[in-house]
Length: 259
Image (tube, rainbow, N blue to C red; front, side, top):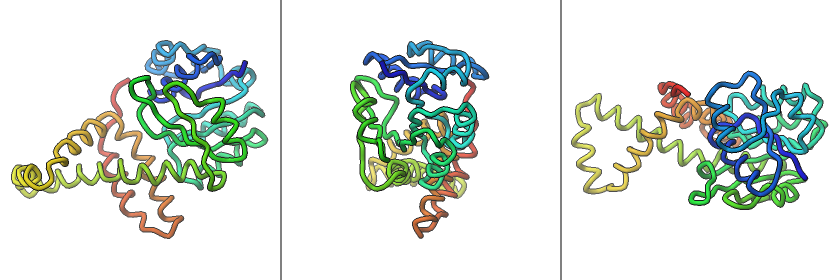
């Protein structure tokens, strides 16, 4: 039976772990140095606590990294320090350049690039895990099923990260713009007039603004790093990076909720 280690189960990692566990896989996590919120999420998902990262790496065939983007490199270094030689799936919202750096760090483990699009997967709200690299097809067959659809794509070893970056550039980037538009209108005393005009000519924007506000309040701290990774992706593609550098500055104003 394939054993999968999840580092470190936030909302998304815990939900993916629960999906994998429901399909019969052994799903491990390591509680050492983790907070009470992570412990609660892992317990609710039915993940098996093996205590330490060393034991998780020793007992796992696949290690799945799902963490805030700014932590992706440090998590990869910590796994590499354990001598892990299985399959390392980096499913973080990072640029292709950062993904390539992670791949080099975890060698000789087999690297598979990943990017999740959608909410934490449940039966009522499924998600897609896009995978790329030499073993992407194999991993898609293992990880996909239930509320988590796994899709192998072409385009090179870091294509999954490129897809995630370009998808989130629109969804989260435009949400940040709406937040900035609201603040600018308020600062100029025209917010009520703007909302009234939106209701006439752009009726969908009021709901989108409300959704942006809710998401920023709970996830803005996490999306700050993601916007910087998107900016780097745009820069490397010869496109202006300023859009998403500004989005990072907007999300940076939101504190991390107490877990």
